[in-house]
Image (cartoon, rainbow, N blue to C red; front, side, top):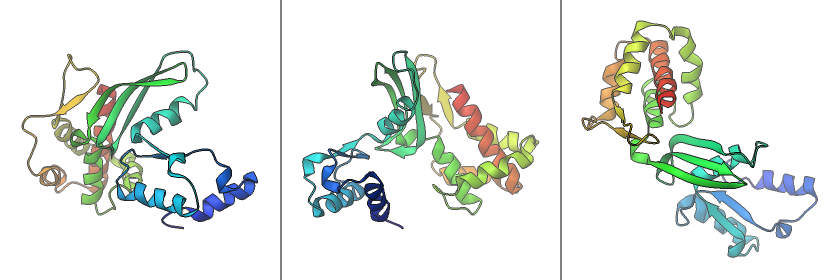
Length: 212
C-alpha cells in the first residue's frame, strides 16, 4: 500500500486490541510542520478525530539517534551517536551524546555539505533510481573492489571535502567545489566499468566516514 499506511495502522490496532483514540501521542520524524508530508499526516489524523495537540513532530536526525540509543541497554554510560544520510530537516549528519536516557546534539552538518548525496549521484549515473536503489551499488562494489580504477574514483571523490583538526566533528566542501557536481562525477567514472564505479563509490563512503 502506497501513501498513508492506513492498512498497516488498522492491523496494528487490531493486534493490540485498542482504538485510535486510545493512543496518547502520535509522533513523526521531520520537524517541518508546514511540509507537505507532515500536513498530510496531520490531516489524516484530524479527519479521524485526533486532536492536533496529540500529534508531535521531531527532528529527523534526533529520531535516528533515538532508534539507536534507546535500542541498546547502556543508558547510564556516555554513548557516542552519529547519524548521516542524504539529508533531513536541512541537516545531513549529526554527532550526539546519549546518557541517562537523554540525547544531546554536539554538532550538525548542513544538507548542502552532504557526502551521501555523492553516492546517490553515482546511483543515478549508473542508471538506477537515486535515493532508492543505492543497495545495488553496494551489491556491485565487491566485484571490482581492489581495482586501480576504483581507487582513482575514490580519490577523486575524497578530494571534494576537507577535514580540519580545529573542527573535529564536522567536514566542509572544498573551496574549489565544482559548480556542476554531477558533471564532475560523470567525468570521474567515464569509460569505467559499472562495477569499478560502484566499488569507487563504496570505497569513498567507507573511507570518508572512517576519517570523520
